[in-house]
Image (tube, rainbow, N blue to C red; front, side):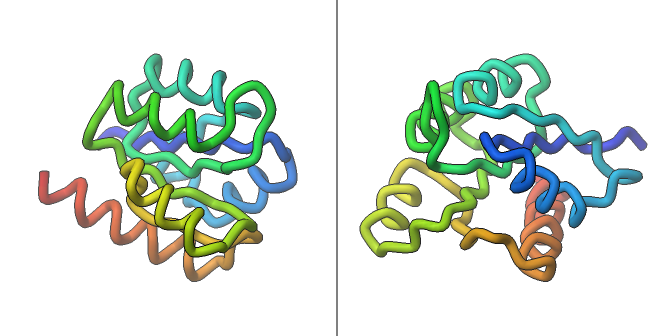
Length: 125
């Protein structure tokens, strides 16, 4: 069976590393981008199974990147990672079509449980 693809988009190398260490590299091909515009371009190129996306980034922020990804694939599974946990921010992210919002820094169990949920969704499709 081929590996599933996951895209991690965050301008912080440390943040990308924190997410990646909770993803099983034997089960997933992990791709990275350090800003929203690169993330959208890479999304188009590789069509990953799901995305971990930061909100605050240079060039293109996570809000715009999420919008663009959803234009490419309305069924895209995007998990937004953010330190901004204001209700209005979370509501806006969900309105744009995010699958889930996780608080930064990510907790191992939250990442692992979210990946399990997404795999269950993908296996039903």
